[in-house]
Each structure stands twice: as structure tokens, then as C-alpha cells.
Image 1 (cartoon, helix red, strand yellow):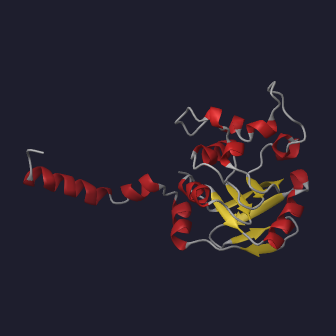
Image 2 (spheres, rainbow, N blue to C red; image 1 turned 60 degrees about the vertical axis):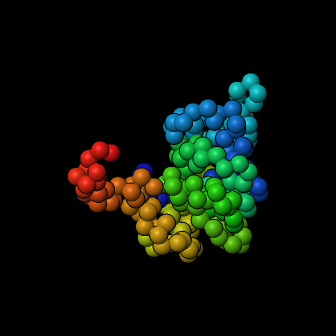
Image 3 (cartoon, rainbow, N blue to C red; image 1 turned 90 degrees about the horizontal axis):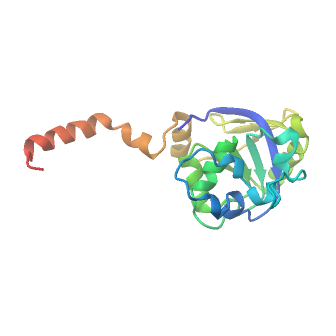
Length: 201
């Protein structure tokens, strides 16, 4: 997966609480096992009418937020079923960081496995970021993972916590497969040794 170090991008405000995974990517789009192509259906039922036309008032349909890379969200984001398609859809749209007061556990874990940085902050800090995000195309926020710091358009900064192992995985672009392949030499040596010791296998 792509490394995450320092991200500067437009932040879109979505202050809804309890946004579940079916809202993020509705069930009818779960037929694929591909990680790409889901971005166009992100928040499908909020973005489009039943006739497939865009709903102008939805935040990601507004011109200023069409290329947002950061989402400022409400509490319990990603609740509901454990579908990994939810972070796939967010990533395919272009979202690399979600900042909220709390996340559902499985969704939170799936974000890290797919190169998305989920940040938990107190509601007071979220309110400040929502105010920053309300500025449209001027809502540019920088998320600095090495220094664990968020910088707003006015120059203020907010510190955030992250578990060190997860931080290292994002900085290095290590998903579960990447972590395994770091031990490629030892795996190859084991396989060669086993062929010699148990050639009938």
C-alpha cells in the first residue's frame, strides 16, 4: 500500500454521527473483490437521487470538496457491518485521512490495513476542524504523521496520538502482506530446508 507521511489537502466536513458502513458503501456494490472503482459509489444514497443524478447539497458533490483528501466526521464513524469495502471506497475516492471523535473498532482497524489514517480527537478539537473545513476550497489542512500534528489554514496546530506500531506501518506502507514479505529471506530458507528434510511433501 502507499506510504503515509505528510498529507496536505482539502478537508470536507461531514458532522453526522453514526455513519455506518452501509451509508459509506451500500450493499449492492459489494459484489466486487477489487479495491478500485468503488469511489464513484462512496456515500451513494446521499450523493445521488434514485435516478442517478447528483444531489447538489451533499458535501462531496460541492465543487470545493470534489477532490477532498481529508474527512472531518462525527462520532462512531464506520459502525455497522465489518465490510472492508468501506475503506476501499473512501481510498478510491481519494480520502487518505478521517478525523472523528470515535470510530467503530473493525472499521478503524481496516483503515490502517488499507493506508488510511484514522485520527481520534476530542469533540472540541473536531469542532475547530469542522469550522476550518467549512471554508470550502480554502479548507486546506496538513496532517503530519511523523510529528503527529494537524495544521489548520490559520496556522494553529493540534497534536494527535497513534499507536507506534500502526504509525510505523503507515509510514513504511506495510499492510499485512507487506509485513509478511519483510521476512521473505527467512521464509525462503525455511522452505528450502523443509524440501531437504522432507522431500516427499
